Image 1: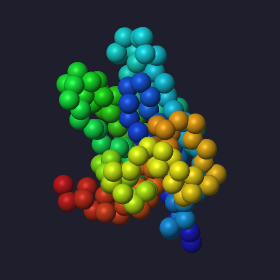
Image 2: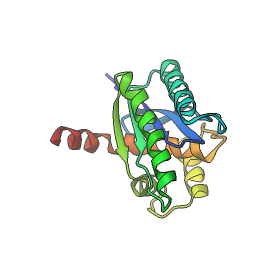
Image 3: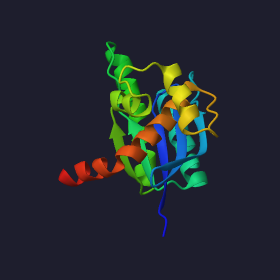
Image 4: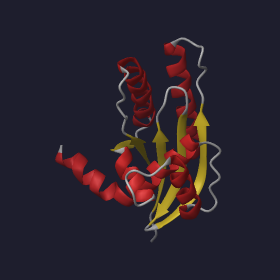
Length: 168
């Protein structure tokens, strides 16, 4: 009996949050869908976060993933930007958790190393490798490509992530 896992990969951001859905059957990966959620930039913070949550909830309802994976936040030099990104990331983690999905987290370096083979890979390299790993994928944005990279990383590391979660 074959066991197919549908994975939602997420690349959080307040301006753009990328999402990607893949299926993993053993080591075989298949592209399902991807996109980018764009909360209104001029709206108040609470409204932007609500739109982000609504968009993610809609993706989860439409594609019924079994598990979710989120890229960890990159901390930059601007505390205000880091705080805003943290708020968006909280919503990005909340939506799948509310739907009953386990949510794994992966460092950007691990995502790049898993997909490209180098932890310092550039965005265009990630997008190119996503095209090789998932030939049917046609992400329209780098955020969607990054989200697919997070999903691929989870497919490769989900056993280790589950063991680490149990250890907590």
